[in-house]
Amino acid sequence: MIMKNKKNNELAVCGFATVKKLEKNHPEKITRLYFTEEVAPKFGGLCKKIAKAHGIYNQKPAADLEKLSGTVHHQGVVAMIQAPEIQPLDSEITEGWCERGENAVLLDRIGNANNFGAIVRSAAFFGIKNIIIPLDEAQSSITTSSYRVAEGGMEYVNIYSVNSSVRLLEALSGKMLRIGTDLAATKPVSYLNTVGRGKKPALIILGNEEHGISDAVRKNCDELVIIPWSGMNNGVSESVVDSLNVAQASSIIFYELIR
Image (cartoon, rainbow, N blue to C red; front, side):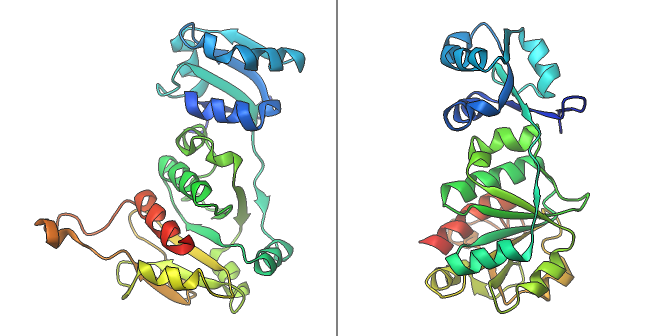
């Protein structure tokens, strides 16, 4: 759920670990802080910083925090920040990636906010700081839920938007290795380990939870990779489990790319 105060253009950030990471890295972003009596002693230092910046902090009952954040998973604390603006991707930015050898991730209509947040968390963990999302209703964006699940990862990545994933892939032809993930692929994900040692940076494309990458995107990939199914070794039927959740898969993919 997207919880924004439209009048103030704010986003609710909740979850103990997430707010603590925000306190550590960018306390200046917090305009208002609300917390329950139970966690109040853990945020004394942050309250002093907010007071110094003439911000607002208050103790509230858990029910009020649920209304503020739109979730029962607030873990006793909600910080209000200015709603992050997603920068449109342009050729100057992608040329910089190519010059510096920076990898990037393109999300092809990842619709679940929790999956989006988990992918951001994995990308931050593995040092992949460029994430691209299409301006598509089917694509999740920065929300209270995705921010919480990322557990501080949003502070370490840059998120860009594009009008068309296909046009982006066409523009990056020959400049970055465009690698899609697909259940019909023949190359194992370990192939990414050789890519990581190459001259061109990689653009990893992760597809929609139900349908995978679109046909148009697939046609504009240089390579397709798959995480090989290993359930047979443990007596698991392929008809029961033949793929990982996209957020789980992203961790394996990013690991293979950078190892």
